[in-house]
Length: 229
Image (cartoon, rainbow, N blue to C red; front, side):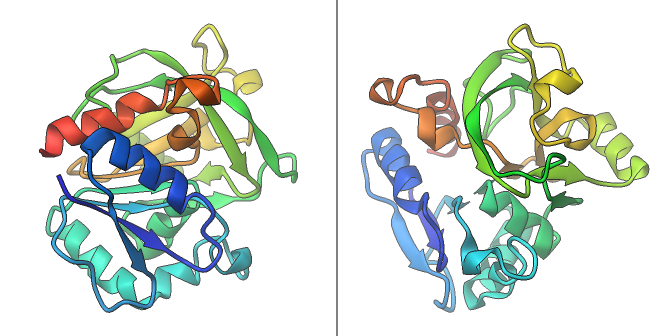
């Protein structure tokens, strides 16, 4: 499986996710600069976390207009799987590949801590190595992670099974206490209609090795490799 990681000025998790991809695939992913005209043929494109362009204007708004994103959007619409983590999720909403927006956290503070997520749907290519209703511990690190969409969009996401991850407490209950940023319906990650584009705010690459304190993020990468190889 060949993967590419798109690097923007201000990306700070590009190398972290590259390490996870190499561990899962046995090969280094391509690191593609945001000013490149396109992405070489690959099986997976990853938009990493960070603070592209310093989060000026809106988070992800300027990165969404980077030259390489025209090709990323075209590839995604043609069926190439795309994973957007944190800032990558913001970029996906700014390009229109995913609905909704990521607003300032409800408490108006930057949050950096572990949270619990419920796996809402175990399906290839992103969550097949989990079980539906699994509770996993994954770190967050964001100031603009408050997912918002109108009620019709939220109902459509729910009805179509496009909510991939939901914030919850340690027991798996989707309560306000388990929602770190105020996201609508505790949504932490969603997919497009085809299930080939996933955006999520938590950072699975930050908890994918035992030396980091846990491996709850590892199945995401292993599952992608299995599904796309």
